[in-house]
Image 1 (tube, rainbow, N blue to C red):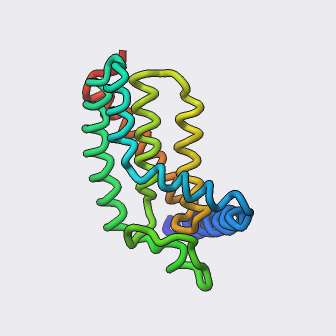
Image 2: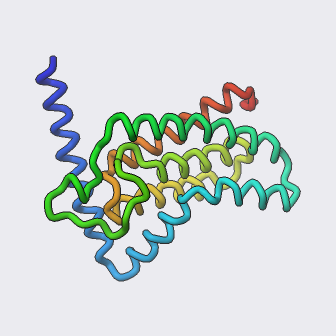
Amino acid sequence: MLTVHTATMNTLQELDLELLSRLFRQGERRMVRPVARALSRSGDGYLHLLVPALLWFLGASEIDQLVLLLGLSLAIERTVYWSLKNSLKRQRPQDAVPGFRSLITASDQFSFPSGHSSAAFLLATSLTLVYGGPVTAMYLWASGVALSRVILGVHFPGDTLAGGLIGVSTALFSTLVLGLLL
């Protein structure tokens, strides 16, 4: 059983390295790098405050539900993210792959899971659950944030996939806890 687990983990690691290599090379294209930087910055967390404030200013309905959902979801997500990141301690690509240099400096030491991806998918899911609307646009933005983290070389693709799953599942769980699903 341990051999199957080890073989599976090795295969996943090889796939992660191959995808990292392919995606990172996209950052060499003229317009890709600045777009990746902008998308990455948009996932820094300020939109979690700015979007509800803007919606409140515009008089959007159900802003109280959104604020409650974001508050609970972020409290849970940040706890899960921080606990996993600091207990698993997966090295970032620059530290794990010989000769690899990321295009930006990450704000913390470890790679798994991606906090930017987790937070972006949490915001996209929360907005979608409360308001519906342009679901595709929200998830394209969140996917862009996740992809940018790989293109910039600060995460492996598996880190961003795990982050996205954490963000979506945390928002869904919080919605159920708060009884917000109709």
